[in-house]
Amino acid sequence: MATGGSGFEDMGMPAPATRLPPHAYFAVSAVFHYLGPAFAVLLFARVEALGVAWLRIAAAAVVFALWRRPWRLWPRLDRPTRLLLAGWAGVLALMNSVFYLALERLPLGTVAAIEFLPVIVLAAFATRTWRNLAALASAVAGVYLLTDVRLVSEPLGIALAAANAVLFAAYIVLGHRVARTEKVPGIDGLALAMLIAALFALPIGGGAAAPAFADPVALAAGIGVGFTSSVVPYVADQLAMARLARATYALMVSLLPATATVIGVLVLAQIPTAPEIAGVLMVVTAVAIHQELTPAPL
Image (cartoon, rainbow, N blue to C red; front, side):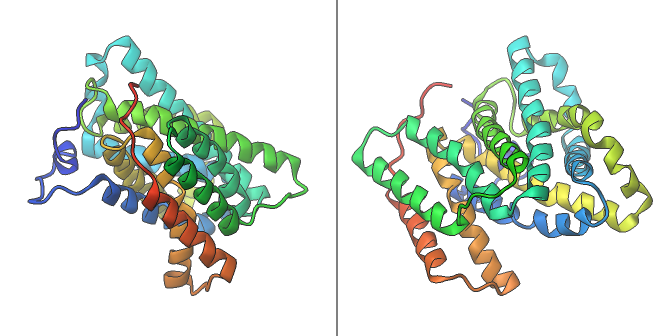
């Protein structure tokens, strides 16, 4: 597995004197995951949901193309690795598109709660101790308190959120395989997959994104969404996945609702309720007591 170098070396940057732990990369991903929606709010008033999704993917693809020039990697890859990257690209294209369509119809908390359920299942695959069972139970209860799961009279929205949840689980599985393969150095696999995803998503949201090219504010916001939502967090995800067992990473995703609560307090002055504070504590407890197991072969 290509996990010997530091994340900065993988990205073509000088390695820091002290190697960052994988949990630090995940923390970066968790924080930037919630900066993107601030730009998306502006975009939803100007561009349709599928257009926002394509702008996000395309902006990230352009950044990766200028940075990594991933097309040079494709001729050197074998067929299984090409299929892996193409499959991951398809998941990225569909996941982002379905996510924004679901947000049009459901509250963010409901979508987030539904999205998290398959991730718990992924973590449960490697649960072989009472300690890990307790961690999963605490994580599920904490996320429930944070997201306030409730039924919404919007069947299409529920279906879209469920599809997004399955795709998010697939993103973790395939992304973990890409991060651990020796065929793809560093984050070049992510760069190549994002480029392919932009092509896959073009017929889905390219037309809806067209008005943004005549609107400098919308275009700038689209670039911001792509960078904060698909470049920084996905790079951090790859660096974390390369050194964390899949089950550990899947459980740590339960920190995302807690991160959202903290950012809400610091940035938006949204003071959490007592149940939400309890949820944050339960999620943090789950991550603290979880025992990492030896990664299973991918």
